[in-house]
Image (cartoon, helix red, strand yellow):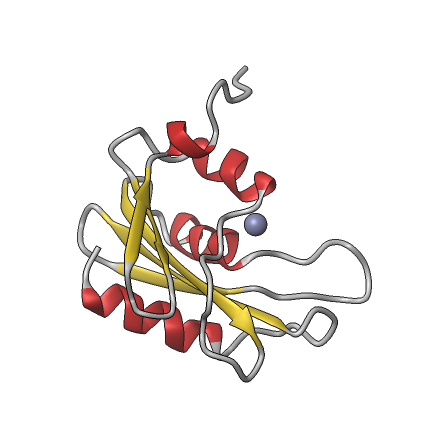
Length: 130
Ligand SMILES: [Zn+2]
């Protein structure tokens, strides 16, 4: 995880479409080849919105990427700076587990740009696998 990833996640967050929750999340997904794909949360009238993490993965995977190094996530209410860690939801944890191994770093940013790093096994122990 690098400073650039934090800045990209923050700028992606500002593109969030979240008129219902007014909670904006941005993510920066770094591939092992060094590319970075960003994502934001996108809501709608129903319940089928997509989180920033899965948006970033969808962009990367649909671009042919399959090997990932890290994801950096930042979130906060619209108009505010991040004041606490924005942890991936259960759906995103299960989704990410499909594409990452335990070397993958899940980086969560707080208001002081402090980084907490987690592995997928820490966030999703005993995950469902076919
Ligand atoms: Zn999620």
